[in-house]
Amino acid sequence: DIQMTQSPSYLSASVGDRVTITCQASQGVRHYLNWYQQKPGKAPNLLIYEASNLETGVPSRFSGSGFGTNFTFTINSLQPEDIATYYCQQYENMPLTFGGGTKVDFK
Amino acid sequence: QVQIQQWGAGLVKPSETLSLTCGVDAESFRGYFWSWVRQPPGKGLEWIGQINHSGSTYYNPSLKSRATISADTSTNQFSLKLNSATAADTAIYFCVRWGSRTPGFDYWGQGTRVTVSS
Image 1 (cartoon, chains in turn cyan, orange):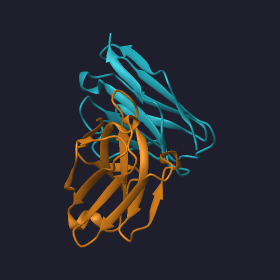
Image 2 (cartoon, each protein chain N blue to C red):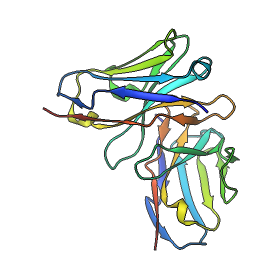
Image 3 (cartoon, one colour):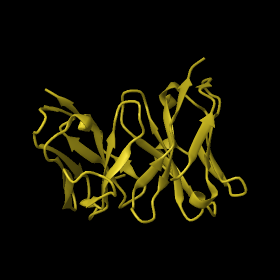
Image 4 (spheres, rainbow over the protein chains, first blue to last red):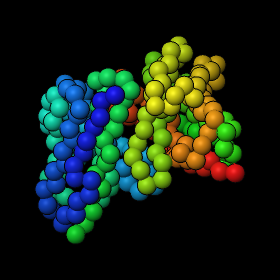
């Protein structure tokens, strides 16, 4: 199985801050990497697909980059509604696997 | 908008079979891969397995062959059965669609909380 390692597992930031999360794959996944946002008590929501493509309706302050084993997810100018847990997920190989999650909270 | 409803027993006894069903509107069912994903309390996401409308399946080997996913195309429903349940199977279970235009889990069911306990 491809292991997905996210860091940090928790971060606190202020409104307007730039937030960066990294995701490292145990082997290359090319660009087959997605990012999801999960708010408490809700199902996850797809934000970024194929490492860098913004899903329809997702605000442009969210972005993703990377290829192979190292990926980055960025929120430019954190907003109150962005408080959530974020997960990366690879689909290069079966089984599909997720990172452990990064909880983003306010300072 | 894709309509997804999921249901099933919220309490399962250890060693018994966990059983959940997901119903989808007809237009959204065909031509897609449908998966089950679970989330233990306070933890991350685990993919269980998938099925397409023709019945082809793939499972996460971590479930050690305990999982069975089946589909009924006449009712646009698909089901998960997980036998020999243990406390480690306590989780919220989601049925999820893998998109065609966007290669990701684009539509999620509301989730069903399942507790394995005597």
